Length: 262
Ligand SMILES: C[S@@+](CC[C@H](N)C(=O)[O-])C[C@H]1O[C@@H](n2cnc3c(N)ncnc32)[C@H](O)[C@@H]1O
Image (cartoon, rainbow, N blue to C red; front, side, top):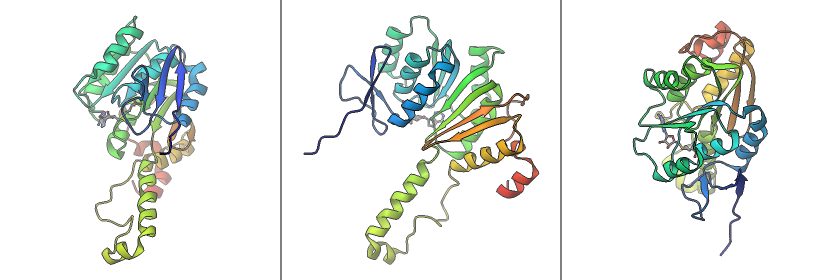
């Protein structure tokens, strides 16, 4: 049997096992982190500027990311939001041991697209203070992801960072389907299936990344910089005031709205 290599990262004495597609570490003493080595290297590179940050993490699952950010960034405060209303005992035990100052607040049963609850939680945790970083690794769907961006991007400080993880997952899936179809042409030809063109196909989350790219061209005072890596997109907040809840269409300008038909 072929053995798969185990990727681990030690952060501040805690061993994280990098298993993007599963929920459990192979060793009970380790924390399972659902992130690829590429993501981890990127966050490590960002760590010096984010020490003691004010952070929001959207999408908690088993809490590997929450634990990782706690150890790596040593946040002043970290608000973590999760749709599931079931607290994860493993995470709560980890926080009891490693978060002695109660910097982390995990809010279960919160939809990232809740335009009342999300701002309320941010107000409760941070008052009028700006955020340094938001990481959205939640629904990976266009509409909720856009709503969260509209709510939270304006609340970043100047130069603050908004990260959207796994923005390309639908394209990876599409490529996989295309490869499958190519390897069994007779089977799929008979059914006249294609990987795209299905009437039920939803606009993928990558459409938001296209909008943000155009937004950065239209108004550098709102978005100074956008960095699109494999699966991870980082958007830097500019200096101008932006009203929380401003619709994404307002970021684009007339030409952008015309180009993207929105
Ligand atoms: C990929 S997992 C998060 C992994 C986690 N960030 C980590 O690094 O370990 C995605 C999580 O987002 C949650 N989620 C999905 N839709 C959501 C929504 N609308 N609002 C908030 N959380 C959501 C899911 O329940 C799931 O736990």
